Every structure is written in C-alpha cells, then in structure tokens.
Length: 420
Ligand code: C2E
Ligand code: CA
Ligand code: CA
Image (cartoon, rainbow, N blue to C red; front, side):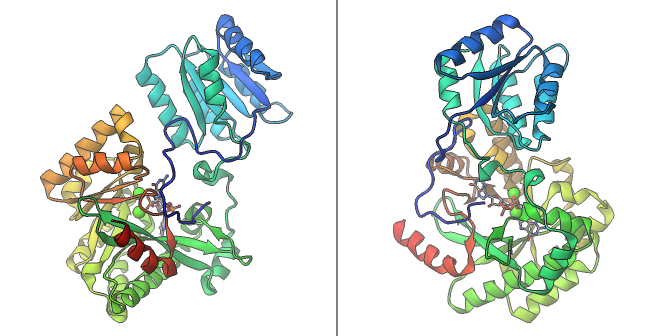
C-alpha cells in the first residue's frame, strides 16, 4: 500500500478510471452474456482492437466454469448483469473470491441505477471495475474502459483476502518488539482549512522495513485474542505522540480506532483513562472512533463501555456511518459527539446521486441531533467544495493528506498553513 504523502492531491480517480501508471494491455478476456448477438457485437469490437485471446460464456454458470477451469486467469471479464441462470451479481461474488480476480467491465441494457448499484457492489467486494457500459456496447466505450486495465492489482483496491496475513506467532512476537507503529492522517475544518486533529492508523513494520496496512493483521488479532494488547499499544503510542506535539506547541487532537472487541470489555474505559492521565494528555484531545458494525456483539456491554468513556470526558465518534446496521438506533442510545460519514458516500459524491442522497440525509440527521460531522474519503477539490456546501464540519482524505509517520506531521501542518 502506498502511504507516501503527496503535497499535491492525486487526480480524480473517478468511478471507472484509475490513475494507472502501469500501462498494460489485457491479454485474456471473457465475454459473459446469455445473448449470442450481444457477445458477437463485443467480440467484433475486441477483434478490431487486436485482442486475440477472447473466450465467451453464454451464462453465469458457464462463466464460473470458465474462470475456475485450469489455465491462466482472465485479465478482464466483460459481464452482462441480468442472465437467466446465475446473474451478474452472484457472478461478481464468485469472481471476488478468486485467487486472482479479473478486472470487470459491466455491460447491460438495465437502467443506469441498476448499473450503478452493481458497480458499487463490485467495488465493495474489492473488484476493480474498468467501466460500466450501456448496451449495445460501442467499440469506443469498450476501448476506453480497457485502457484503464492495470497489469497488477492496484494497491488501493487490494482486498484483505489476497493480502498476506500475519500469523498469530508473528503478531505475538511483534507486539513484544517494536513492530507496531502508527501513522497519522490529518483532519481539517472544511470552512477554514484549519487542522484540528489527526487520526491514528495502525501500521506494522516488518523486519525489512516494509509497512503493512491494518488489513494484514487486524482481523488476525481479533481472531486470536490479541486485539486488546494491540489497541493498548496504539493508544499508548498515539497519546504519547499527542502529548509530545502539545509540548512542542502543536495543538492536535488524536482519534484512535477501537475494535468491536475492545467495546466488549468493561475494563477498557479505566485502562484508557489511566493512559491519558499518565501521559498528561488533556482528555478533550482524545477521540475514540467506533464502527457501527462493532456495536452489536454485545449491546449491553458496548453501551456500558461507551457511556463510561463519555462520562470520563472522552469523545466518541461513530465511524463508517451508513455502512452498518441500525445507525439511527445507535445514535439515539449512545452519546456520540461526531458522526463520520463513510467514504463510500463521500468520494465523488457529486457524480453519484444515490451516494449524495445518503450523504445529505446523514448530515441532516447529525445536525438535528447536534452532533459534529466529519467526512472521510475526500479525494478531490470537487469533493471538498460539495461537502463544505452541505455544511459538513471536518474533512479527511487523500486530497488533504495521506496517513503519514509522526515525524512528518509538524512539517505537513506548517506547509499546509502556508499553502492556504
Ligand atoms: P477507517 O477507520 O475508516 O480509516 C480510514 C481508512 O481510509 C484508512 O485506511 C485511510 O488510509 C483510508 N483513507 C483515508 N483517506 C482516504 C481517501 O481519500 N480515499 C481512500 N480511498 N481511502 C482513504 P487504513 O489506514 O488502511 O485503515 C483501514 C481500517 O483499519 C481503518 O478504517 C480502521 O477501521 C482500521 N484500523 C486502522 N487503525 C486501527 C487501529 O489502531 N485499531 C483498530 N481496531 N482498527 C484500526
Ligand atoms: Ca476510523
Ligand atoms: Ca471510516
């Protein structure tokens, strides 16, 4: 994963096109459509573009058969959505589970909301969607979609499923040594541009110095009973850092992420409170982010833990809002002070009417409840402008800054202030 920070934001990577640097041509392609005519239209277009290794499947089942049968994996699958046997949505699920998933071009006669929803779903499953085409498919549209093909799976869409996972042993050893490290991603007030806080995001430093993202080890830690020590480590590192910055006159709040399991342990609020006292961090500087999905394992205990965190003066933020269950109910029960809209409804929302509707509704809800709003996943100036217009308080995203090591933060803050 690329955690290097750019001073200039990356260009928009809108729905179907990526900022590919590895210009490559797809070699093996599969056309999936139950209509022979539709397949032949696509095949002729591919022929003209010089694609020679093109297979066809006349339905979902045949497509599954084709991708699972021996031989090199397909680079690209051009896929109809509505088919009589196995539909495109089921098919995408099968593709996502493959060792080396193909990149996807969706082609359908369905209305654009079905196409958009299917595209969303494909991306949620970690598939790279090169394009969404209305039938009949034109050569130009196909050509433009295929130009987005990347030879290697891009880091941004890498799924935890295909990423090396740390073993329990490695985790346990690393927790004893200094493998756990924390990167910080700034959050800024959208109106003024002022830097308000940073989110602590855990990283794992391998012996060779390479850095692994949370997807490589959080679920392992959760499954092996090691999440609590991991969380404690992150909290200790982040609060220590916060205290050091404060001493240097850099007044930053710090958000830390909690796992669902942390909320199932009633000793957690006391533990974090002790760390705060020991390190001399003002309690108003600490924000705990919890994901909605996390709140459900044991509702009574989670409520107990969160209410006590709140009583101790620690701010609670509801993370990934809109992706979990029963968000509304949680908002009523739990004393949240910040609602963080998931980036699925933020990035490029201006061009995605449904995402925008959810974004607006979430902001409206938060404002009525008197809760501050943060949007994550701001990737372009357009995203920023839209969110500011909607009255969202705080923003976070690659357009502002990528997560960075602690030592880069003061310099970044300075150059950010100068640039604004
Ligand atoms: P999250 O809490 O939603 O954190 C935001 C994630 O979105 C981060 O990924 C960040 O790098 C990424 N991100 C930020 N801005 C943008 C943007 O503009 N575009 C895109 N596409 N992505 C952006 P990261 O660091 O890989 O973290 C992934 C998840 O791992 C976090 O999601 C959080 O749920 C979890 N996590 C991170 N640190 C910890 C931790 O210390 N403890 C626990 N339990 N979970 C953690
Ligand atoms: Ca978070
Ligand atoms: Ca989030």
